[in-house]
Image 1 (cartoon, rainbow, N blue to C red):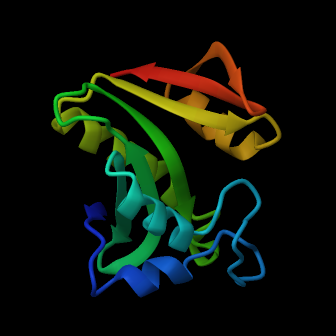
Image 2 (cartoon, rainbow, N blue to C red):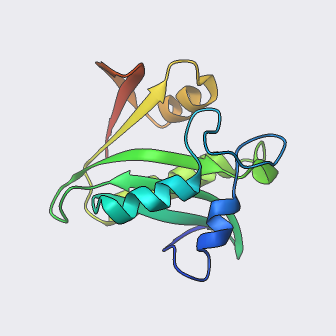
Length: 149
């Protein structure tokens, strides 16, 4: 079972060490997103950014961050989602994303937006399998997809 947890002093360094790079070496810019340390830093300067850790049982397997501009907003944007290289190809991405959508539903979110690099075939396949559809909007070579919960 996937659990979504807050990031705090006890797990922040572990979250920063997660990487999607196949060789296991973390870099500032990974294939389709930046490293988690940059995301955590960004969340300290932009309060709309909400970082979360993903656990399977008690094992840290991934990270996501979303933007919600006010607690009353029923629309969010997932701006980061990653599974550590050690857990890729084992179904954790699908399980984690389902847990994220359930997390949003249980918190009153009605609409989820996500931006996808057109070359990121794996991400596009995952998100569209959950019902996300292309909105027609493109910004900085990223395509906007949306899902109504």
